[in-house]
Image (cartoon, rainbow, N blue to C red; front, side, top):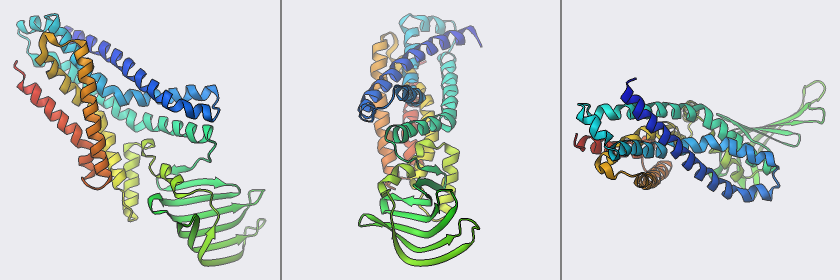
Length: 360
C-alpha cells in the first residue's frame, strides 16, 4: 500500500468511525425510547435492557453503515479539496482515479463484511431480540420455526405444523402429540388442514390414534371429517412466525423457497427478502460512489455540515424508495429481483454518471 493510499484511508476510516458512532447512537436512542414503555409495562429486569441494546447494536450498525460510508467518502475528498491537498496531489501527476481507488476498495471490503454479517450475525441478533420481546418480557410460549416446520407446546400437547397461512386463517399438515404427566405418548392427531372459523380451529379429515402409555400399542383410532379442537393461538399469532425473515440468512431463505415452491406454495415474499439480503450490503459501495463525485463537484466548499445534510437527504430518499419497491414486490406488482435491487442499481448508475462526468 502506497503512502497516498494510507493517508486517504486514514482520513476515511476516522470519519467513518465518527459517522457510525453518531448514526448508531441516534438509531439506538430512538429505538430505545420507542421500546421503553414495553419494558416498563412488563416489569423487565435490568439485564434485559442491556441484552436488548447489545443485540440491537450490530443491527443498527449495518443498517446505517451505507450512510456513514457516504459521509466518510464525501468528507475525505472534501477535506483534501478544502486544504488544497487535492490540488497538490494532482499537480504531481496523480490522476483523480488513483486518489479515489483506495476509497472504492474500502467500500468493497465493507460490502463483503456487511454481506457476512447479514448472513450469520444479524439473524442471530434478531432471534435474540424476538426471544427477549416475546418470551422474557411478554411471557409467551415460544414458537420454534425451522425452515419448513413450526413447533410449539400447550400444556401436555406438542404441535407440529408444516406450513401456516395466517392471512387465510389456515394451517397445513398439522400433527398434535398428547402426553401424560410422565411424558408417555397417549394420543396422536393428524390433519391435512385446519381452518380458523368463528373464533375456533376446525380440523379437516382428522385422524386420531390413542396409545397405551405403557406398551405404546394403538388401542383406539378414529377419523373425523371435521372436528373442532381447542387451540389457544389465533391466525395472527402465526404471522410473526411466518414472516420472521429477518431471522434468516440468504442461503436459509433460498432453501425455504425451494421447499415451498416444491410443495406448491407462493414464496414471493421470501424471494423479495432473499434478494434484499444481497442488495442492502451493496448499498455500501453505492454510497461511496455517490459521495465522491459530490465532494469533487463542491471542491473547497465541501464542508462537513454539507456532508451530513447530503448524507441524511440521500439516505431518506434511498430508504423511502427501497421501502416502496419492497412493498410493490410483496404485492406482486414488480418481480422480486427488481423490488430488492432497483434502488441500489439506480443510485449506483447516478453515482457512476456523476463520477464519469466530473472533470479530471
